[in-house]
Length: 275
Ligand SMILES: NC(=O)C1=CN([C@@H]2O[C@H](COP(=O)(O)OP(=O)(O)OC[C@H]3O[C@@H](n4cnc5c(N)ncnc54)[C@H](OP(=O)(O)O)[C@@H]3O)[C@@H](O)[C@H]2O)C=CC1
Ligand SMILES: O=C(O)[C@@H]1CCC=N1
Picture 1 (cartoon, helix red, strand yellow):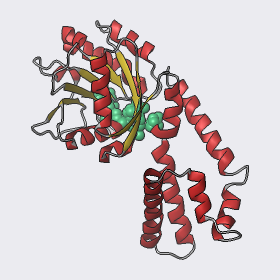
Picture 2 (cartoon, helix red, strand yellow):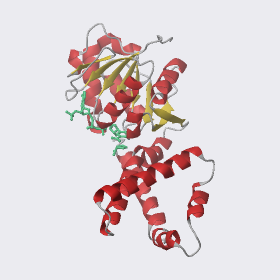
Picture 3 (cartoon, protein in one colour):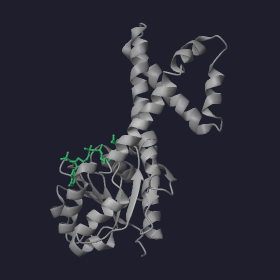
Picture 4 (tube, helix red, strand yellow):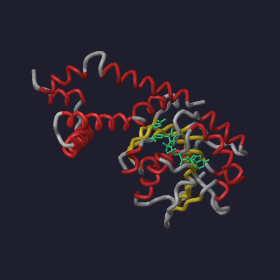
């Protein structure tokens, strides 16, 4: 199947993640032709339009890729509504799911029940996609054509980096590390800010220091080839202030065990969301 140079994308669900992807695509130099299905989104412009429900998708619109960005628990209802609205037009599309958990097999089954067995591709992006700084894990099932796979890869690449995985199972760990990961970093920013305030800094100053530190450290990780452990050691003077803090954070029952337990919990939850 050869895809057109300006592909047609149906984005179903435009909440926190769908909205981040849409913002990223609209900011790209050659945005695709997009119709968004979401009752909360109202604005539209020349490059995209919004309908409130699948039943309102214009009869002239045939999507190349359907991007499903609803909560996993509502996936089957959303696919069924798409099947009713699109009818035979659904057969021309591939389904790119950005949902946690739901497997290719379950999604393929849901599309079959709605009248067309679609090739399924899965991605696990994250919210920095809204500013083009996302990172997505990406898996293409064997049923997806090369053109569909490369188009989905391009859509993800328009909003950040893409790491392709060969095993669908790997998406569980991807979800725990990078899908949920921005939340861990935001928590660090919250906690650093609060601790700075507890030590007498104004909230404005504590916030600026916490955010600037995470930004600068993130840029070093991005720009420099060094291991994170070496960058950490370069900050740590013998018997100095950083060593005092790291003795607390790196105690076996502190971050090493807590981060490991947190990622275990998120991975397990992603598996449960497979349904
Ligand atoms: N948030 C994140 O950082 C990430 C989220 N994800 C995945 O993205 C998916 C969406 O998460 P998130 O954006 O946080 O959730 P949100 O609740 O913010 O967004 C989901 C949106 O989809 C709408 N919706 C629900 N059913 C339908 C339907 N049938 N047709 C059209 N729109 C519908 C919802 O409307 P309503 O509220 O009315 O139901 C809502 O606006 C999840 O599956 C999650 O696993 C993946 C990676 C990161
Ligand atoms: O919390 C969640 O379930 C989703 C998936 C990854 C980030 N948010």
